[in-house]
Image (tube, rainbow, N blue to C red; front, side, top):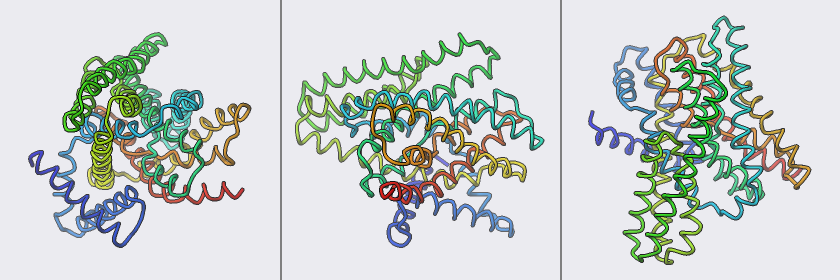
Length: 410
C-alpha cells in the first residue's frame, strides 16, 4: 500500500470515528477515538478467531506503518509546536522551577524507580530482564502525554497554576524522556555504561536541542518581522517545525526540545512583535487544525496497534502488574517536588494526586517501545507499554475530571 493510500485510510477512519463519537458516544475526542479504534480492533481479532481473514489484512496494514518513524520523526514535531504556540511564556517562567523539576528530575526519578520495580517484578514472575532493558522501559513510560486531559482541565475550570504546571511539564518532559531513552538505547547498543558518557550524551541531547531551538526560532522571528503576508508567514513556521526537527535530529540533539523552544519563541515574541492581527488569526487557525487532525490520527493508530502486537499470557500478566508500579513511581516522583514547593507557594488540594492521575501516557511511549531493536525482551516491553497506555487513556483520562472536581470541594 502506498503512502497516500495509508494516509487516506487513516484520515477516513479518523473522520468516521470522530463522527460516531461526537454524534453518539460523546467522550472527550482523543479518548473516544482510541476507544472506538480499540473496540474495532478487538472485533476484528474475534472475527479472525472465527475463521474470517479480515484481522490478518488489518494487521498487515498496521504492521506496514512505521509507528516510530510516523510519530517520533513526523507528527511529534507538529504536535509539540502547536502546543507551545499557545503557551504564555510569562506564566511558564513564573513556574519554571517547578516545571523544570518535574520535567527533568521527575522523569529521571521515575525512570529509575520503574526500572527497579520492573527488574524485581519480572524476576519474581520468572522472566528475568537485564537491567538496561528495565531502564529502557522506565525511560519510555515515564514521559506523560496529557493532551487528552488539557481539554478536561479547561472544561472544569481547573486552577490556572495547576493548568500551567501540567502544560509546561507536558511540553518539556516529552523531550527529556526521548533524550533519556536515546541515551540508554545508545548505551545498550554500545555497552558503554560510564557516568561521564551518559552525562555527555544527555547534555548533548538536551542543551543542544535548546540552542538549536533558540537559533532557528530567532531566525524565523526575524523573517516574520520583516514581512506582512500571512501565507508566507505560515509557510515559515511550517518550515521551522520540519526543518528544525530535521536539523536537531541530524546533529544528534533533541528535536522535541528544539521544537518546543522555537514554538514558545514564535508564540510569544513572534506573535506580539512580528505579526499582524490577520496573520495571528490565520496562524492560530492553521495550527489548531493541524493539532486536531494529527491528534485524531494518532489516537486512532494507538487503538489499531493492538492488531500488530504479539500478546502472550505471561506478557499480559506482566502488563497488568506494571500498571500500579508505574503509578507508584509517578506518585513518588511528583510528591517530592510538590511537598518541597509547598514551602514557597500555595498548591491546590490533592495536587500530588491530580498530577499523578492526570499524567497520561500516550503515543510517544508506544512509538519508543516499537523503535526498540529485536531482542529477547522487546515483545514484553512493547506489550507492557501498550497495556499501560490503554489503561492510562481510558481509565485515568475518563476519571481525572472527577478527581479535579473533588479536590475543589475538599
